[in-house]
Image 1 (cartoon, rainbow, N blue to C red):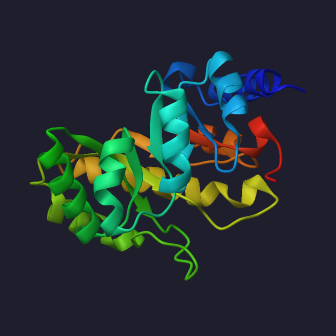
Image 2 (image 1 turned 90 degrees about the vertical axis):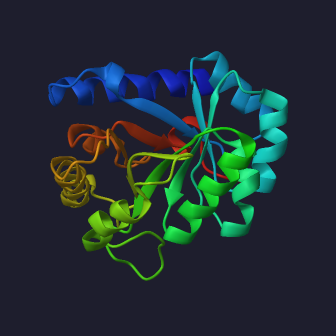
Length: 225
């Protein structure tokens, strides 16, 4: 199977999951995760129609973005340290891992200095695991209120990495919970549209539960080297 074959396979699975949920496939964005993936394979994915790529590390992303360019979107999908906010603003179209007030404020400051608005997602530690970053579920509304006046950081929605299970059905409640959090925020006057949830092993369930972005690495590029 080539990268293009894998992209078509994933796209078909997304489409079928959307149909099962009564959703429009156009409302679901494939984010290809390119951590440790070489530039030629990224080019293959782009040629196969992938328009959004996600990177976990700034240093690795820099060379790839320079090589591939901004004819596609680039999302920061790994944990971002506050002192790297300026680099992130310059490199990425979206930061999916906004997990603290300090980081949100720094991204806003750096985007303002660059004369741009950076899009962001709030990372939610939906399983409240000690090993993972992100705000806790009960902190969402206070967090949104604390950043609502930032002019150069546009929060578009929520992102999560739930506890791992080989059985995707065991992860479904976490995806459903994130959707519920988004809906509660919107009923309290916020306007969040995006839900970034689901990876190679569970993205079909995530789509059924409302994901608007699925972050796919292995199913497109194979096991990491």
